[in-house]
Image 1: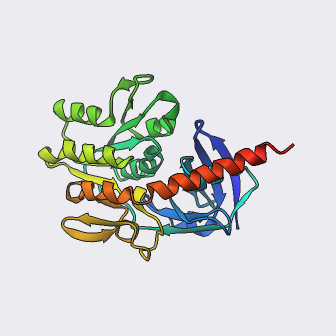
Image 2: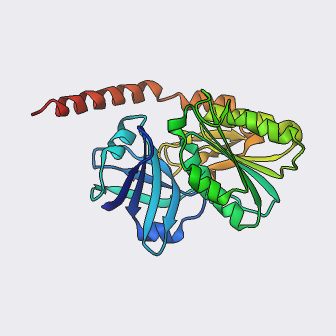
Image 3: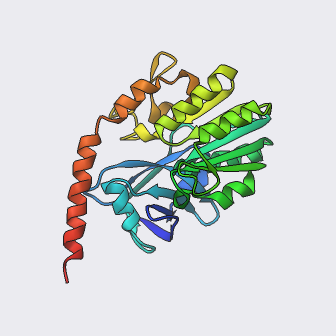
Length: 282
């Protein structure tokens, strides 16, 4: 059992949880993730580690409540426990001193790019951050990103905060400005990562994306996270989650990511009915 020692609501649907896990806190590196099972009847879900404190023995995760399990996880409070919290898993993010690096976070993907941006800054890079979301209230970790980035740009789809448009628009503008960009790390929804890869491809800018949205089991045993990278089959959870964006078959990835959409919808609807029934009890 793993105790939740801190809970912070970052938005209506995004929650920050700090969990006691000393061994994971001691060993985790940027890009690693954990597999969580809330209770004995729950499914296993992968969540990227946003931060850790080896001295306190805690691990920070940021969760967007979009389905049954993430909603259940976000409903827990300080002092509650999760049953399983396994990690650190996955290959650490490749961190080098490239020169100038652009780190892009789309939606809750900002929680995943934050530790990478931090590690790249510590490695001596000039870090330019781009954080985007559909609307202002979904922008997260702005202060944290601003503290570690040499420059930070904010975009929102609806123009409610920062620049109106997409993170890829800002990336294209940076390239057009003549800034020499040595590497790009883009993490967020799969379509967003695909567009960012298409932006950098003509300029041959080294670009990494994280394929954690497709992971299921987290150990390579289920085969659900098979992806084609450079014409070869890879498993996102054990070979990644970071891959060379220009070698990823995004069209196949998008189709595979839709495999369980109907089942996820049914599970979410049943959970919502259960919650409503409980809330109706006096």
